[in-house]
Length: 228
Ligand SMILES: [Zn+2]
Image (tube, rainbow, N blue to C red; front, top):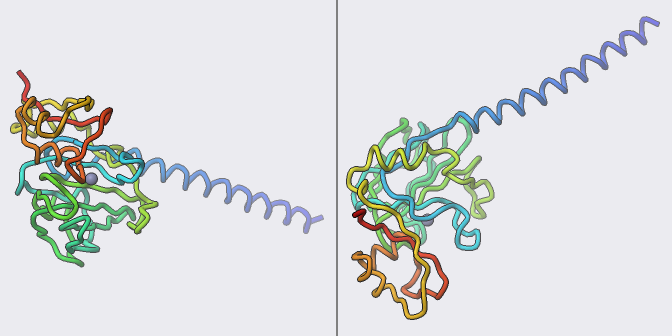
């Protein structure tokens, strides 16, 4: 009888332990997600979202002036700092909670592999290197280590402070501009659009991360327009 009771108590203990650990891990993962609200890595205008280009865009694009300082969103260690044909000057940062962030197309890299960085450290400058046309930061967030298939990539906007706030409060040079979505009509060219909105063709290409000058009817383009 004593044996049966011991077995019974033992089973109860194991079951309650399992249940508790489940709750703990579920809670802690939600907690991490909800608590993260990073400042933007650079003050600028959001010009492309995560998941666009038929799901092949694994980050967000933030247009800003060339040479503007790019800050790491959270303390961590530089895991890679190099030049690639696609990312251009790129830096990867591994954070203590296991997430990894990536900063691409920079004109200059200001941190080396292995370096420890604090939250807000300047790690590079805005540029137009690699597969990029126009000055902008391509910023990726990965729940775990970056991999070539980017299976850990998540929408960076879920982890950044409210963009409007960042733009309005901290970005005087673009506070009088607004982002306008335009749909390409028959006969439109990047040149005609640039004339209409008083912007340059290079700016249009950069803001929309276009690979070529080719645009198609029905395509949506974003333009930063001076507010009147
Ligand atoms: Zn991008």
